[in-house]
Image (cartoon, rainbow, N blue to C red; front, side, top):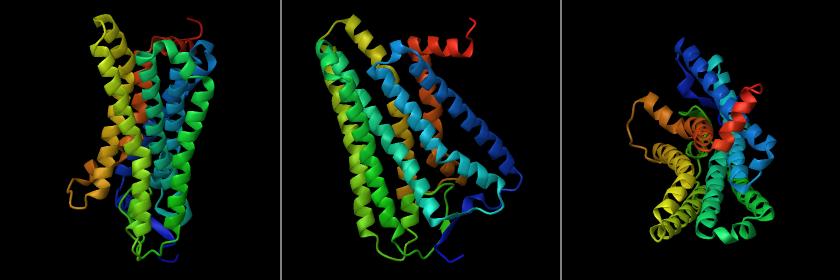
Length: 305
């Protein structure tokens, strides 16, 4: 193998028999993620009364969770059982694109959900005129296509770099970590990475915050009953948003701050939090907080009830 053609995941080295424990835990987590999200998808797909914008967006979140974890868990579980932990350049960038497309898509979907809640609370009489099936379809397609195109271009630029190293101290392919192994100055990649960060994270977060500021202003002028109903409507979205944002901040902080010294186990967990906690927590939040989804899931689990 030529240096730079293959990358090696160094964190899998010398794990000994503990790797079987990690494999078992990872396998259980992955099965739980698939099960919970598939139940959400089936509940919304099969129940016609749930074919509404808010529920369709929840379905999109579950689809995205399955997509993102499919780019991570099968590979990491294979590496835990394997004696060699190498990955080709092309496969590495493909995994990186899939994982970060998942992260970008999550923010885009949460942004559309925030706008949906803003219209429902602040402009209820115009809700069905604004949030139409056509608007929802176009919004989802555009907001999912943009990150895909940007990340694909970024991956293509990264493949053109000449590599001087091939050791990755991660358990998955991370584009920024790969670029740091390059022999060349990666100014274009860094600038393009900043564009992706602004487009897929900062802009969606800003629009989400704007939506909630407007919702708070409307609630301050309304009755206690209206405030209570608005709070109950928004709380699942807020919990999901905060959970994912904290996970992303942890991952970005660990990737960008070189001198941050943490135990290896904690560092790995914090870098993987956005791939583990949101996909398993999101369906639980919506199943527990939204009675219509909960009832349908119970029917799916126990059809004779």
